[in-house]
Length: 322
Length: 109
Image (tube, rainbow over all chains, first blue to last red; front, side, top):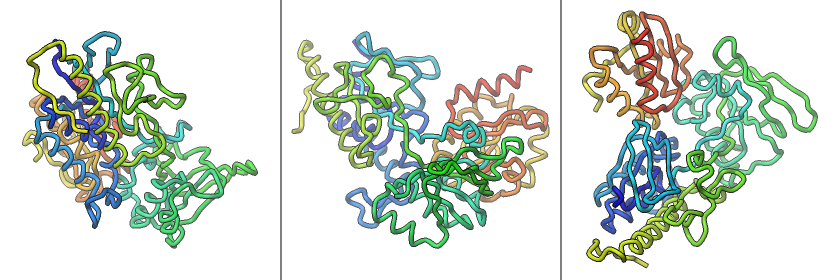
């Protein structure tokens, strides 16, 4: 007998929506929050594309609401991090950082994706000393100072615009000569007098390791190879995300970029293991699509455990809503 | 909300408070989402190390001087001081067990 019928790893919109649905189906799910509890929305300010809030809602507030709603119906939320999973044997076993473990019949993976770094060494070393992947966390430290934002997508433009509240000047460094960001975000960025653009370029290095803080970046033009030194105090990296799937490598079918492959809804290569949200989606990556896929995973998991308990008459009746 | 075992440091009392023993300081602010995530971990560490190590928080909004001195330009950041000397820096989120091990290591020396 497994400790749990359904366990969910991850506490972003996907994980919490899955928990809400499974809790309402009386499955008393366990939800393991993970290190980056609340997911990427915890790093945002106003979310204006979550339906139902005509004036927008603050990302962290939305996540608090989702969590309380999931708990209201019987989700048990556990702080902590899963450090090991065994998906080869049934029930599945999850081991936590404190050494304890839990067994579960069904598993929903909603571990999301984390900000990608430049991977040039110096960016990681100077993290917290001028290099950041979170504008809402660290923008405050750059009042009246020049900074750079690396990237050309929606998040990069959002961060650039947000950072103009603090910085004297924001230079966007982008690998191409056009932005990937949506029209509305591009317009906002182009209209902002504090934002300048350096096109067709990448950050080759962040200085100054010896001083232990950011003093400049070396920008390399990808067309000419020409390098320039740009003195500044901060660098915000917004070049996308990598899925948090290291835990499952070798046990689940992943694509070339490390995303979990799903089929027929939220099913993974292991029956009983389901995936939802950014950990399996590199295309849409929205809060609402993550929540939607979390709902799908919950319904799939519910049907799966119902199939198991057909052999155990007397188990709680399950409602399937579809 | 914070545990009463977590001390509050300011620009004014920082040097005094970190001068002796092993002291872990959490640099944070209200508007920082990840800081809110780390808060329960810091509370738990304060209880776990009660009487052996000091665990404290410093609000960077209200105390701009100390973050500047240690080139803290990102939060959450945890600094660990031993007998007044900066011994460890953790930027961003980390599991409670990892932080506890780090404190233990310095208590053991």
